[in-house]
Amino acid sequence: VMATSLPSLRGKVPTEATERTTTSEGYVDLRTLELRPHDPSTGGTSIAPTTWVPGARQRLIGTLQATYPDRAKRRYVMSILGQVLLGHPVTELTWLYGDGACGKSTVANGLTAALGLTESGGYAVDGSEALLASGYEGEVARAGLAGARLVWIDETGRQHLDTAAIKKLVNRPRITVRLLGIGQGSIQAQFSVFVATNNMPTSSDRGHGSERRQRVIVHSQQFVEGNGPLSNGQKRADLRLKYHLADTYWREAFLDLAIWEAHKLLRAGLVSP
Image 1 (cartoon, helix red, strand yellow):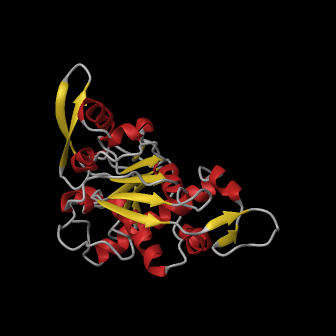
Image 2 (tube, one colour):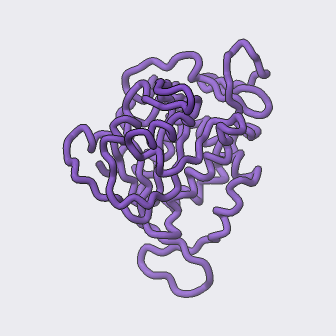
Image 3 (cartoon, rainbow, N blue to C red):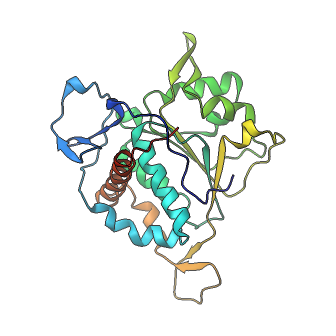
């Protein structure tokens, strides 16, 4: 399914627990956009290692417009960032597909840095392709997704897609995991999964159950450095940006963008199905 429009969001009413994001200076009420003091009674167990700076998302306008010149596609990408914070997962595994230097990793890497990794108390998981495996390997890998809101896999070397594993990972309220020394169990699925790839894996499963669990966002732009002539589809850019996404300046921008998009969804009464 090619991602050219906003996802279907009508349906569930978000719970109170999904209406806040804890930051380094307090928690943000996503419905009212109020920053409130940390409060243990809220039951939150994760914290984004980033200060919320209202309006910082403006720093990303140029980058988003260059990466996604199509407005509908740009709006879709921005919308799913808001869904990530709400803990109502995007119902498809989202493939970010394109050749190198096309900007496909920028948004996911930037949001991962802003939200922080779960291993350090944050909301994001920098995952491996083992998450896309079925059986024992996949169950062990997926045990690390407890409490995550964003799961980010930067490139997969798999040539063939294990569609059975995809069905066990996305678009379900709970997933089966395996804890070493304990055995099988299950965790609530509050995460959205994004995978960047230069080469889309093949799949022999053409059934609706597989296709409705995947969405592809094609990145057709290519960013080049230097002062040479540009070909069709190329844009001038500072390719060093990807090395600075963990800087405070960009982390603040990505966090504010996600908070703003989550607020817009709540205000409109829209959440992920």
